[in-house]
Length: 258
Ligand SMILES: NC(=O)c1ccc[n+]([C@@H]2O[C@H](COP(=O)([O-])OP(=O)(O)OC[C@H]3O[C@@H](n4cnc5c(N)ncnc54)[C@H](O)[C@@H]3O)[C@@H](O)[C@H]2O)c1
Image (cartoon, rainbow, N blue to C red; front, side, top):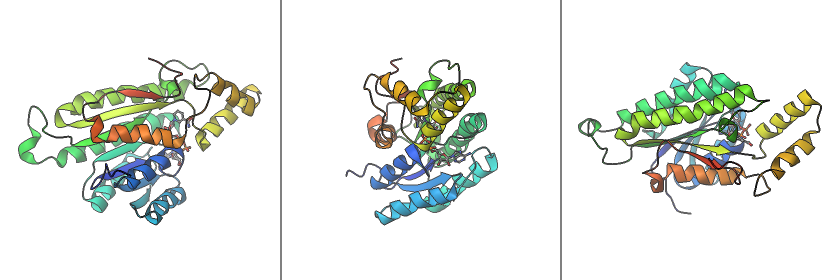
């Protein structure tokens, strides 16, 4: 496999499970040194072990992204381990507003500050950056594209991630730091199972039927895979996407087309 990320230092939050785990494995397979960050430290450490066993470079850290001091410590730890920070993928999900909205905002703040500090002083004030100085990808959702009658907070927090992505992209474009997001529809991770189970409990419907009916509404008639999300995210982290910023890409089998 091509080593698009050789020499790059990366953080993947939520890297202990689902999409984050697939991203961590793929970035490492393509040469990045990855700090796997997750509130479930055993899961984060399993991902890091898997990467090392496959010959890649990884460490893990326990972090609760609802706590800004832990975000600060996570960034510092990546810089200490890898000497620099070039890529951040934010793929965590839990206490909706604290983690999705505030957690993503603070991660952006700390990561961009580090990426700016890595630019040589004589190049920091160039009107046009002469190289790409960092890539950040946030996980939004198709639920962030419009209202959701039964997922008010989740939909609002995912819409906020689209807005944060655009604002950060505008603020850091002249420094060559690209900020993008993706919107998955359905990926059969623990989060999806929980989501469907919660809905089934609240409305007394059958969880399996609910999941099947949702997937039937996707034009491609199937759920996406973690690896398909990782492929799109790694494209946005690669030099093929140097001229793409502020964008939110639907990776969703065609259910959203805006
Ligand atoms: N799975 C889907 O169908 C789907 C659809 C749309 C969007 N998404 C988004 O993709 C992202 C990843 O979801 P997934 O399906 O891979 O979920 P997942 O449950 O498989 O993984 C989420 C990971 O985040 C970690 N995490 C949760 N709260 C945390 C916190 N406070 N601090 C640090 N880590 C924390 C969890 O421990 C877990 O390992 C989420 O942002 C989710 O909203 C998923």
